[in-house]
Amino acid sequence: MPRGVIAVPQIYSHSRLATFEDCPKRFEYRYVLKIPTDTEGIEAFVGKRVHEVLERLYKAADRGQVPSLEKVIHRYHRLFEEGFDADRVRIVREGTPVEFYQQMGERCLTGYYRRHYPFDGDETLGIEQRVTFSLDETREYRFQGIIDRIVRARDGAIEIHDYKTGRRVPTQKQLDEDRQLALYQIGLADRYPDQPMRLVWHYLQQDRKLTSTRTPEQLRILSEDTMSVVDRINTETEFKPRRSALCDWCEYNDRCPIYPKERLRNGRAEASSSETTSNPADPKLSSATPDPITRQDGQLHLFAKKPQADPGSRS
Image (tube, rainbow, N blue to C red; front, side, top):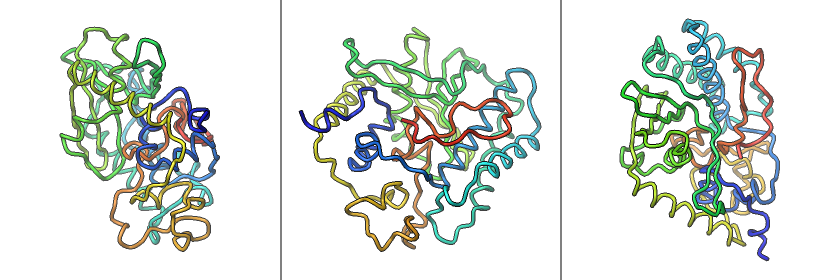
C-alpha cells in the first residue's frame, strides 16, 4: 500500500488540506512523518495572544463583567511577556524588534474593543467551539475545526466569526470562495437547522469586518471539491516540496531539500530584503499555518495567570 495512504490522518481540517496544497513536503513532515518542532513564528505567537485575550473578554462580557480597555491591554502584555521566549519564537524579518510585534497586537485589540464596546450587539453562542462533521453519509470524509466565536445576530442569523491578525485583507471574491468558514457552516448545520447563516471575518490590524454567505448549492460544490483534495492526499506518494514566499516562515526549512541553505542563520530562516514586505504566515489567515484543531494556545481559561505551553500544531 502506498506510504501516503497508510500514514495520512483519517480526520481532516481546512488547515491540513491547505498545508498540502501550499507544500506537500511540509504536509509530509508535519502529518505523515510527524516531525516535532519546538519553535514558532512571531506572527503566530502574537495571533495566539490576541485570541486568548478576546476569548477571555467575551467570557467576561457574558457574565456582565466587561473589563476596561486598560485591563484588556494589560492582560495582553502580561500574556505576551510571560509566553515570549527568544529561543523558541522566531522573528524571520531581520532587524524587526519584538516590540514592533507586541505593539501590533495591542493595536489590534484596541481597535476591536473600541468598535464593539460594550459587547452587547449580539448573543455569543460559543467561544473556541470544536466542531466535528462528515462530508459524506459513509463518514469517510471526516472533518474537525475550532470556531473562534459563534453568534446569534440581532436579526436572528447565526454567524461564524473568525479573527485575523495578519496584514493582508482578501477581496470579497476571495472571501466568497473561502473554504474554512464555509466548512464550519456545514459542520453547524445540524446544530442550527433551517437558520440563516453568515460568515464573518474581523481583520484586526485594519479594523475591518467583512461578511459572506453561501447557498446550499455552493456548499454542495464545496463538499465535492474538498473531498477531491482528500482523495489527492490519500493517493500521494512523493510529497514534493513547493517553493513560495512562505518558505522563510516554514518550521521545516532547515531540512527541506529545495530551501537555500545559505538563507539559514543560526538554524533559522532569514528573510531576504525583497520579501520583507510580504505578508508572513498568519495563524488566522495563511493556509500554511498551524492547524485549527490543536492550536498552540489551546483552550485557555479566563484570566489564567500564564498561557499554556505550546504542545505543537493545531492538527
